[in-house]
Length: 442
Image 1: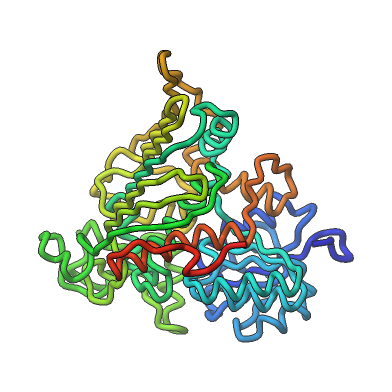
Image 2 (image 1 turned 45 degrees about the horizontal axis):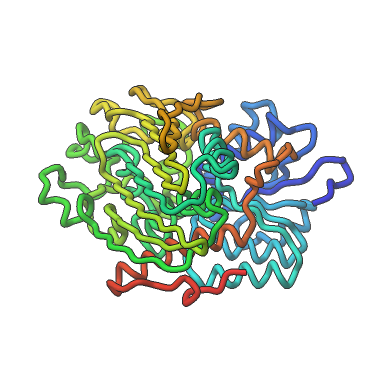
């Protein structure tokens, strides 16, 4: 998108929740010479007012705010060039499509949307308008993941035969998906869409391949009403104001986090949204333990497992090839401290703060007929998703070089989404699902 009359690209943010803060800070602090934040849109005025208070604290002026229903009015009134979509997942397509039809480009949080019909709508609108949609898959920008991409592209393991990918969400981070709107599959697509689309996109990117067929099994094992059998449940619906939640390690204490209190507790009167539901309360329609087998266009396969109730947080990736094996092991934290278990990972900044517990990462190439090679880990940070957030905003907002092709397109967003949607359908049917039967990628 060409800069406006001021020489700076004019951005508006729709969706004034916690994730918006990363983009807002990048716009007004890191790239203020070339970008300009000009407006917020949201269904909740109190949340927009909170962001404006923080802008003033940063030395920036407050910006105009618009009800979400006046989104298209805002685009013209504020002469918006690019829209940043950080709203609830199920609403992404509304704003993406409206912005494209109004001649604006879009950067949207992942997942691009939550179902095949909405995905098709976005792709069709991109084709009709010639507009650009970029999906904020920040995991592509993690220095470790960039190293994996380079090693595989250089043939470190030869032709890739299979991938094994295990992701563990600990009982602090994993639990948080069961307190908030993500617990409803209708609004989030479940963890196969909201969370695992990150991981499916990485595999697509690493392999330079597209998913063909998916078979999966998943269930709600630990959280929700049935999870009460494990003996952790307390009798309350939401944590705030409940004596039963005072020392519950699964309870989120909103009043202990100033940012979260302003964004959610102080904003409840407008829309009734409760950010601190009991993870064992009724209404959970997503899974917490999921296994996937996927086959790709290159013939490679992937086995994937996501556990949302682990004692530690991290992931393991193993890539098997014709010349050896690559192994990536990451411990983001090696345990959860009970005294801080009721916090949110990174508080309102969604991963910006480093956890108190220990962690580390190793990257190893194991060639045939030779000793394993430990690859030095480059540029990893304990902040902002391993340093990925700052690198991503540098490319998406700051116009920094992108030789690895990390900026994900709408088609990339669709391919990651479709793996998760195929897994969800396989959960329901017990049968393998051909991705082409959901939506034909282009």
